[in-house]
Image 1 (cartoon, protein in one colour):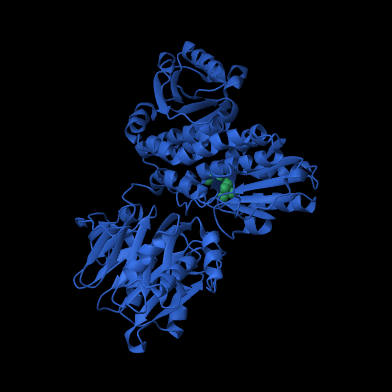
Image 2: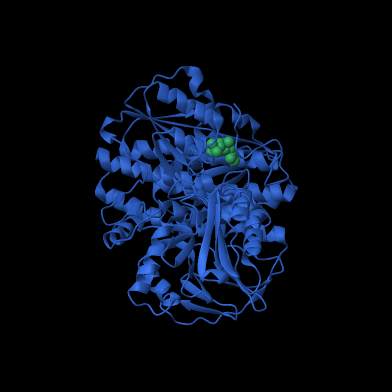
Length: 610
Ligand code: F6R
């Protein structure tokens, strides 16, 4: 999510830090800052940071220069705490400065503990807590910065990459990784640390990728890698041969493919701090609903977010038994909707800037409904306009075709449905426990699917020359059929239609012949038998069937030309797995056709016109 760079050497750090952060700008951010040791002043690190773009930081640095040869820089993409000067990184506590990418899951408990011990906080962030923890560890007798960081790591839960400096130890940077990316760059009498190789590629190509659960102490003369218990790890440096453009995409050919692969991690980030396996409940930060007063829920959204909302209808109705309606935000106002205080409007928007959705929210508020935003961009217009905000924490999505934003929206809505279900008492503690356990296992299952690229690439080659595709699904797989068709048309420009499988016989069956690939969502569940009958109807008319089914289904192969298997999960969560092969198939078909996948013709990432 956020961009990180650190430098230690003989050259002035600030230009190297700014240069590195500029390479990470493409990822999106809302504030930036540096912390640099000024050898002539103490030594004391100087922190310069502000909300806005790097140019704003550079302007500030003109007035408040930060000379020195050791430093670190950060671009923040807000998660905890709105974008502001105070919430920008680096954060300081006494001699310690910290930059951080990720989320500290137990930040509230740690904040309370530290406040009771006298810590004073100057930001709303979870990151500042880590600066205080390291300061406290030093005060409590940790012999050096590395040990202080190690002792502090033992207290935090969550996903993170930290870089820490201490005014008391100006020749050292200490960094640690759990889930968020971290790489060390090796130079001659100078070394680097960064969240992405892109940030340091113009300075060095010799790097060590830091693994999960590793920390690294970086000095001018070398790097020392250990696990969180201090056991040394010996690692070989690699020479990066990627071009700068390839490096931005993490070695993937397109942002879309990178984002498809990022989904397991993005979903894990959506879940961080929200699943309480002890009380079998969900913690929804930023949401304070009087559930007893909610008589009806209306989802409003556009495009892919609308499809997530359609799945949401199934999740909320089945788990919380509250009636749900789903509306296209672009149509909502035109039917003069009947709304009142018993209605909760849930506005789903990745960007948080879609004008149609904003106008629908204004209409809902005018008529007295409460509005909850589900968005990926902290402090964007839609969450600010709403009464409550839930952030998906998927990280910046750059490919125009939405992938990780969609699956994290589904996870966010599943959390909301469980939260509501527990409060309406329609969802038993036992069932909530099973669902939460399944949610926590999703990232591993998703990885299983996104790593099956070779099969989807082969299928794309086989079917990619078709002039049209039909996608079919029943129940909560119907919105996934719509989403599969939308993905395919957006990036490959092939006409595709999504249909409720039961509707096929009412019209689209006329399209079926040997040239029409039909993609059928057929995971195990209550609609399985009926969907298999639909497969048979397609094949009886020479249609080519590609079925997405559940691992262990030995029957489906007899009804389809090709089968893609996904792991089993709870019925309500199946769409989060079945959509993955559809995203990948679309990607590989488009790649095979050679279209501009990340910026398909005529499309924009954020649609701010009606
Ligand atoms: C499709 C896609 C669009 C968006 C739609 C709404 O891949 O990305 O259909 O889902 O424009 O955008 P948000 O979610 O930002 O409101």
